[in-house]
Image (cartoon, rainbow, N blue to C red; front, side):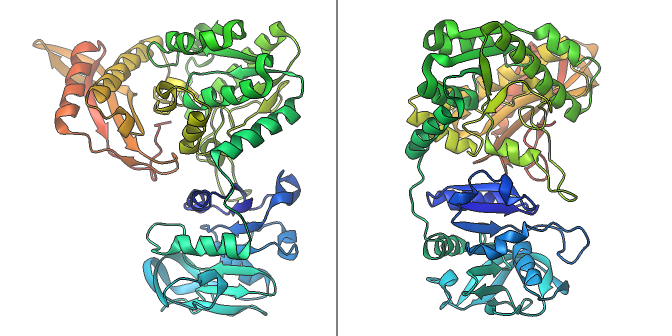
Length: 509
């Protein structure tokens, strides 16, 4: 695999996408991760150091495990990664008098193995305020721009390369070619990572990890947990026990849908738990989004551990955790603050009796869908829009009450219904309702109303790491708004969210 060390760059996930597009496996870890804690490190064929917003010369700036420099494994540093290379090997990195952001014309040494097949002048994306002012020993410059005399460096003797620009962004016209050169010509990797091979290897890995133990599956009925359940079912068969927790935070009619879809498949090994009162009591008077997620995560575990005791001899808990959940929940010591704690990552209690099994934790959402098709899951599951693990808790801003949940569920049902009627459901990554913790004055039937505001959110994305708001037709927006206001008692205003990710997130909490 290719190991990507993340130093806080907004583009790190794009690096992973570019590697996987070449059918090569990669994993992302915090930049300061100890290599002893990287489970697959023996399989690493190359290391990529991401960009980041810190300055390498500042105190407490993040650094990689120093052992990576002497292992002989090919290294590619990008932006901050290049500056880490320069600093470690004795060069100078200083604040630049003129920062460089946006497209830049870069002179390329096409004789370099890293730049084979590129033009002598390439348009590449720059995003930096620091620059290397002196070449480190045993390195030579292989690219320059008007502001960066050392826009790329290489040391063939050390097998280390660095670029000041970002080849991973689409604005860098031939950026993918640079990754291809690094992956195949330098790291000698092969195009051998596919969903078919992933299924085979993951089933073998799960069997080794679990053995003859029983596994409890946290089944939600969504894409991720359904695909995870099928992998485990293929690996351990009837030793898989699925528990669906009806916590009251699901979409309208979700419990019936789960029973219909999975009842025949898992039979007596599927159990439905009504825990609505428990979850709502735990969330009473809670308004902080992070606290909501942590409470939900802990309450889930409490319910699962209680059920595990009833089944007996359950040692593992299966979760449909995917890569964006992990990436957004981790931090770099002293630098990167988690975006949010996902209920199945940062929301889990520190002490758990059950060991986790997470067969999807290194996959992006679109890869999970491909995997689901490989597992022959029906399209009504695979093509479902993503739904957050904490459910409607992260779409009910402020305190969660039954009244607000009922309003939200009805509004959300109308949105999905109209989106489907318009033939847009499969074309949109996610479309849903959010209820705000404020009421506004309205007028209905010549009478004053004072009711909640519903937000309509619709975005397109490939992997949930970035997202663009969807320009829904005005007529459709009008129909949705009219239906919600007329059919949902308790809501008298509908607004449309036109924020991208970043700077916003897809969910509101």
